[in-house]
Amino acid sequence: MIILPQIQGVVARSCHPFGCQAAISEQISKSLSQQSASDALPKRVLILGASSGFGLASRIALAFGPAKAATIGVSFERGMSEKGIGSAGWYNNIFFHEAAEKAGLISTNILGDAFSAETREQVAKAIEQDLGGQVDLVVYSLATGIRPNPETGEFWRSAIRPVGETVEGYSVNFEKNSLDKVSLPPATEQEIDETVKVMGGEDWLSWIQFLSERNLLSTGCETVAYSYIGPEHTHAIYHKGTLGLAKTHLHNTRDDINVLLENIEGNANIAVCKALVTKASVFIPGLTPYLLALYRVMKEKGLHEGCIEQMNRLFYSKWQNHTERDEENLIRIDDWELRDDVQQEVNALLAEMTPDSFAEIGDYKGVLGEFLQLNGFEFPSVDYTQEVDIEALKTLRP
Ligand code: NAI
Ligand code: NA
Image 1: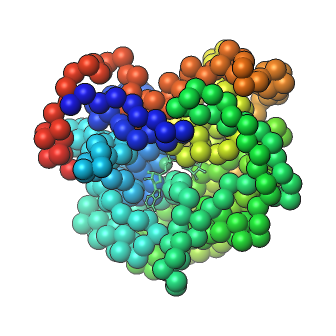
Image 2 (image 1 turned 135 degrees about the vertical axis):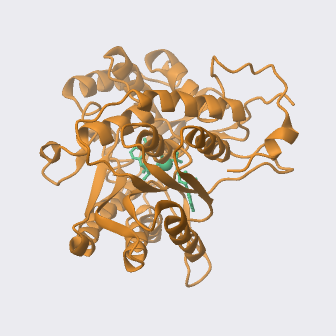
């Protein structure tokens, strides 16, 4: 079978397994060349949300960079079925594991709903069996639109909306190569509450409580969750909207987790990342014009980073250096994005950007290219005209 990209709006309905493998190798080589001044690196790491985006990059950075960590990765992905080839994250898990094994690194994939009690039990068992009973770091990198309410069996659903005002903006459509007008009405109270349930800190806290009660966290254990703040220009749709309120909840939860970890001298952290193309971020209505402008400016200035560059910088240059945190004790790897010179140029581009000019004014080619690469397409090293052996792929397990 020849596998071609199938894009619906901002969602990829197909992926190329060998392109996913190429993406993993590229990220690995960027972590292999890292150096660290510190020896105090986490050796046993649990990653919740390990199959794509920042979670996958965290896993690669920690396993293949100087930490050489053993990892357990939890994710929610689908394999091949009559419906299709499966998700990119499924193949990312497979090829990460294959590369880790080859390098003599312990790696375990757990496929399941990170919100469920069953997945918690599976993780506990894997920490006992594969990591010798404790972890030194828990990375919390879930991005999802739904979370089951264990009491009712129904779902909380996030709604990415402004709060208190209607916002007009534009969202990209990768299927039609267009920038489409969107009008975002203000969130209802219920939409705000549910977004905080899904993307706030409650589940992060509950994971740490669970692991702590089972004595699965080592002395001095760290945990980190990822956040976004962004510049003034995006505040109406993000920072001051429902997602931003969920992130504020996440930041407050860090303080609760710190109290919980006091007896083991543990530490909870928030790393504020830069805006990047991921499966989750292209879904945020109104954000794309900013991404298009940001990509162009940061590339022109030689400051562009993808997930792996961000995570290498997080763990190998920012992590140990507590003097680099801001007044709210947040780790800022959005520092380059928020530089004045970057933001001034971004604003100038945004002022000119229209549905007719977005592809020339912004880095549409680059943003689309990264989106396709997330799904295993557009890798120069892969020959996309080659037949893919579906039967052979079916035998691969994460
Ligand atoms: P992503 O969509 O690439 O990754 C999400 C991960 O969560 C995947 O591994 C997926 O399998 C997993 N997942 C989702 N639902 C799950 C479930 N029920 N059970 C188990 N696993 C599940 O997303 P991305 O962008 O890497 O987001 C990770 C975090 O980084 C989020 O908190 C996001 O807000 C934050 N962030 C993202 C930025 C961006 O521009 N992409 C910027 C700053 C922060
Ligand atoms: Na992730």
